[in-house]
Length: 137
Image (cartoon, rainbow, N blue to C red; front, side):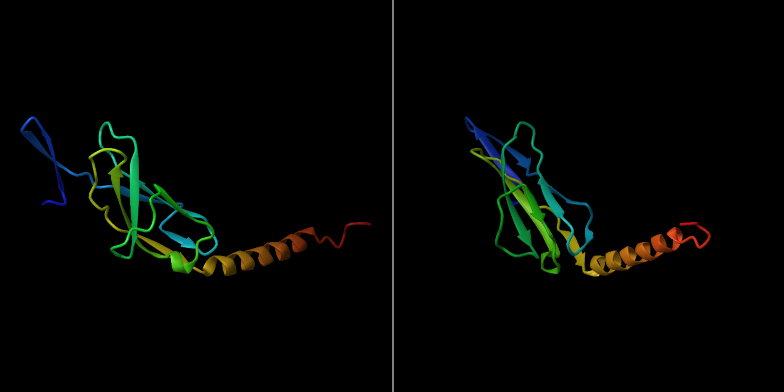
């Protein structure tokens, strides 16, 4: 239970409170295509605490690799795919959070092919619609 609780003592009176669990959000979505821009954000809420230092983990590693609240991959690649989690520590204070639940970022390479195919189709369709054999020139 040591990981989930913090102890606050003042004049021999101690209060035990549960550490908050951060929330990780991914925008635009958890499943994206190679070449897009993806942002992961870690949010920790404790009343009265406004300044946090963050730690990010990928694929359950024991090493935090960033101290930023947001991670941005631009352009995102398949190597960025994985399971991400974060935690927060109050800057200059005594509060800290638990580790968040893991969120999975999936990156596929189909976007390039889909874009190319759609672009070629639109050019063909555009040329077909512009063609009018009865138009006088």
